[in-house]
Length: 315
Image (cartoon, rainbow, N blue to C red):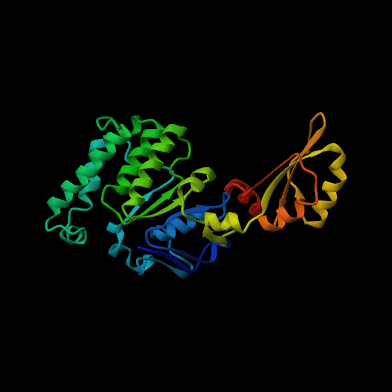
């Protein structure tokens, strides 16, 4: 199931949430949605989930306009909000049972390829139990008594228990310790391998870089760039670390000017050498050819991390 934004715009009074946003997330993609606070990420997600109505334009999931006919696809979409606010006085068991009851209809059973709601309920119980064991959740406790990490685990289980084809997550690992973060992400990777479309909004750039196939960069309510992470890196600035004898420093400065290389980090001085880091748009072939004119102690050429790319786009 694909996700499509067509000139989607949302105003809050005179303030703008997103403006003429165009975006296509292909079926089966693991998509990372990245941007600073206030960029429009949560607004976009709320439009997908029919929690807000667009001021103009449209949002489609599997060719269904989410603002008009969300009921047609709600059984195929799973959503984990950032705040994980649920009924605090209910036990985890009761929350899971309540969630199952939302999907116990003949129409949803047929959509999921089974002939009776009871059969689909048993499928949901099986998935819940598998995830509860994997995530190590105590289902007897009341939701309000759980730690933040366990609350987020429950929100995750509720989001995927009904076998959705599209899973939308808004900052799912924020505030969690690294171990729980990895447990959730490994579960998402497993679900992605089953053919599901994953839409992940996250401030944790390493999380996006290590798991997503495609990334969309949003700023001030508009998309700056949408591409695979590999293509973003290939088309971006290269990071060159040069170690040279101190007497070569003037030559290095001239090389930087000739090749439009920008000093990226503080120059590190050692006993007889200097370590200098530059960013340049030149290709690796061009870089190697130009460096052949210099006497170097060491050189490394790297593609920037997603974090470095983020700083390039937003600062």
